[in-house]
Every structure is written in structure tokens, then in C-alpha cells.
Amino acid sequence: MAMGTDLEIARSAALKPMDDIAAEIGLGSHLLEPYGEGVAKIKLAAIDELADVTKAKYVVVTAITPTPLGEGKTTTTVGLGQGFKHIGKRATVAIRQPSMGPTFGIKGGAAGGGYSQVVPMEALNLHLTGDMHAVTAAHNLLAAMIDNHLYQGNGLGLSLEDITWRRVLDVNDRALRNIVIGLGPRADGVTRQTGFDITAASEVMATLALCTSLADLRERLEQVVVGYTTAGTPVTAGDLKAAGSMAVILREAIKPNLLQTLENTPVLVHTGPFGNIATGNSSVVADLIGIHSGDFLVTEAGFGADMGAERFFNIKCRTSGLQPDAAVIVTTVRALKAHSGKYKIIAGRPLPEQLLGENPDDVMAGAANLRKQIENVRVHGVPAVVAINAFPTDHPSEHRAIIDVAREMGSRAAVCTHFADGGAGAADLAEAVTEAAAEPSEFRLLYPDAATLREKIETIATRIYGAAGVSYSAVASKQLDTYEGAGFGRLPVCVAKTHLSISSDPALKGAPTGWTLPVREVRASVGAGFVYPICGEMRTMPGLSANPAAARIHVDDEGEIICLS
Image (cartoon, one colour):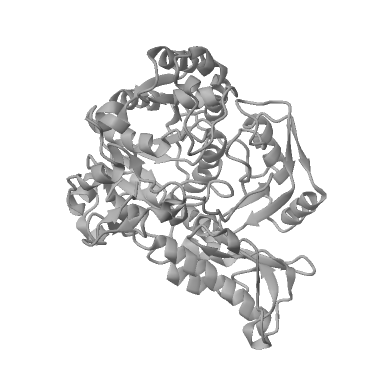
């Protein structure tokens, strides 16, 4: 019998009352703010109330370098959370909130899949509790304050060419990437060139994700740099007296959202920072609550272990003070075959027939990427467990090849069928993670705060990406010197590069070596608390495809959403 669509499966779920879900993680109803059916916000007082409760084991789910095939990282995160219940353990899942840009663009939904989903699916993918819109409003209020300051005489001496703060929108709209504002009579503002990014790329989003309290959020917003004077002096949101109003807009958005899986495992959904130029992780605040919620807290980091997991370890954990006990690296047979470089795969087109045939040699040819990502986790002192997300087209010999690679690297591995079988299909993975997390913690950061920005960049490039070295443009070198002089040198770095390769070149598959990381520009997200070197072209406002999901999604006469899957 064929499975239903993700939406059909989600609608058939038997949801528990939110008070019951909250009780499973030790939260009383006085800490909940109900939001429609199946969703609630959690008051920040929960952090203090749970502070004396024993900490859960902290598990991050990451992956090999992404391919157009999709490896099922969120589905595995949800499946693992459900799987713990099947071995007698209590788990909580923490994930990012999906952006509506991708939902109406190519994904059509980002709540997991099959029988490992977060529900209610429609609420999760469409607005949820309005946090994305609050970030959009707070970000754009600051943009309006900047342009009003220019109109009112520019008393701070902002250089029009050095204003770095753009506007944001949670819609894929390539026409807004570069625009001119202030056209018309003088009363319509100062004419200048600017543009829009997607809301997930907003520094406000990254700041919300990394703050630890409302007071910390306010302080971080004060430090947001919006541009520079002609003398090179940073101008901040605090200088513009905008931070207080921004914090007011975000006062509800800072509270994590509580949902559940199809099998009623509690899920914390909070923030959605962009994975290319920001951390790509859910919020610190959610984890400070979830870490006291049972036996395991399972969270997800964006893209491959060279990106989301590296930022999880060196930015998020540095901020939260929490130490991970284990990491899960998601892989598939198809993805490792893709990393062999033998197949041309284009998203949305049929897969090459040869890719689906039994061929463990091709799996081994692409296994260099898996080996490197295991190494990237273990260099932080964290044990790695390989999750083989199984597909019906796989062959047992191909699964054995992946297990052999994992064991060769000193890691555990488990074959998972959670998409079709729910938590029962991830029980073996849950057992493997339990064993790994029981090992003594040896977590360590990759670099100290006191290292220079160049030292931090070069450490990540050589030890995580496998580069031979780093080259800096003249512009990047000047920016690094400026940031060091401004006191930003103690911040961690978040390298903005392609997610399609461990290298900075999306065409290079596997685990390339001997190449040089080119840093062409460096920007500072001072409010969020990191500096990001830009290595290549980073699209911070996606465009729609020729056949976007928005062209298929609609609502019927009974108000039911159609084709959200």
C-alpha cells in the first residue's frame, strides 16, 4: 500500500493536548502561552525554573555535504527523537523554523517527512506564531530609522556608500536584490542604492538565535553595526536609538515555540538563521530549556558538518556554554554515489538509472566526504554516529560499505527507516547514539577567543575544509584590520561559503585538498556576535524557479490547504 503525502500523514496524527506535551519536558501550564491548536509559546521563566533539573545528553544532527537529492536531515532528527521512546528513553527535539521563502519556492514544506514529521504541519510551515514577521518588522524598522536619519541631516555622518544594513522580506524575490530607494521629490527621502535579503539572512534573526535572555537581546541589538562614517567609525543601532523599539517588537518572538511529532515527542521550534552566512542552528534559548527536559535533547545543524556543525560547536556552544555529547552524521547511498563524481544530478530531473543499480564500489568512491565529515566532528572531541537514511532503491551491500567506512573511522553506524516506519525505524540509531553519548565528554572548541580573526579563519580552512591555505583580497585584509582595531577580534568567525562542497568551489566533490580558500570580503555581525568572511558569491535573497511550489499550493472551499508537501 502506497504511503500518503506528508500533508495527508500529518493530518491523520493524533495530537496530544499541549499541557500534556509540556508536562513531558517538566513544564507546568503556567509557563505556556497557547497559540491556536497544537502550538504554544514557552515563557522564558522556564529557563530558571528548570535550572536545577539534571541535564539531558546533548546530541547534534548534521550530515555529509548536501547533494540535490536531499539527505533527510530534519526527517532523521525527528525520527531519532521518536526512536528514543522505542528504547525507553525520553527525548526532546529542537529545530529551526522554516522560512516561507523556500516553502513557496522549491521545498513546499520543511517539517520532516513521511512518518517522522513535526505537527501541525501547516502551522509550522506557514507563519507559526509570527516570529519570522517580528524579525522582519524589527529589521526593517532599523532600516527606516537609518533612512530617516539621513533625511533629517545625517548627524552621525554615515557614508552612503558604507551603509551595510539592507531590508528583508520572507519571500523569494530576486527583483529586490538590488534596488534604488528615495526616488522622487526630496520629501521621499535620500536617494541611494540598497537591496533586500530574505528574513532568514537578517542579523536580527542570528541575534535572536544566539541571545540568552531579553536583556541580552536588547544589549546585542544596541551593538548591531549598520554602516560606517567616512572616517571608518562604526555606526550602530544604539547610536540611532532604534534598539529599544526593536526589542519591543521581538519581546514575544524570543519565546520558543512548542509543538510535537507524529508520535507526540516534544519539539522546540525557534528561529531560522540562514545556513550560508549565519549559524544555521535553532536558538540558544530553546536549548537552555530543552537541555533539562529528559534523557536527550536532539538538535539539528544546517548543511554538512563542515558548516552547520562547525558553527554549532564554535559559535552556538561557545555562547550557550552547553557541551554536546554526540553527533549524528546523516548520509545516504545515493548521496555518496553522487560524491563519487561519476553522475550528473540535477534537482527536479529523473535520476540516472545507473545511480540506482547495486554498486558498493561507487559508494566507496564517494566515501571520502563521509570520512572527512566524521573527522570534522571528532576534531571537536565529540563521538560521531553515522545514520544511513535508507531508500527502497538501496542494496544491502551498499549499506555494508557505509558501515565499514564508519567502523574504519572509529564510529558507530545504523541503518534507519524512520521515513516509512517512524520512531521504530530509528530505534537502532537511538541505541547507537545512547552508547556514543555515554562515552566521557572531551568536547573542545576549535580555536580560542584570543586568536586573531585571520588565525580563526585559517584554522577552519585547513582543519575543517582541508584547504592548503587562505588568500585575502585587499578589501578583505583592510576590513580584518579595521575589525581588529574596533575590538571585534575576539568574536568567533562564521565562514560564508558554498554548502555544495567542503571547499569553496561547488564543483569540487568528495573531500578535495590542496586548494586555497579565497576571502574576498569580510563583514561583522556584531549584534549576533560573529564575523563572517565571504568566500564566493552568496545569494542572500533566493529567486523562484520556473515551477515554484507557490504555483501549486492553494486552499479549497472548506479552508483546507492543498499541495503543501
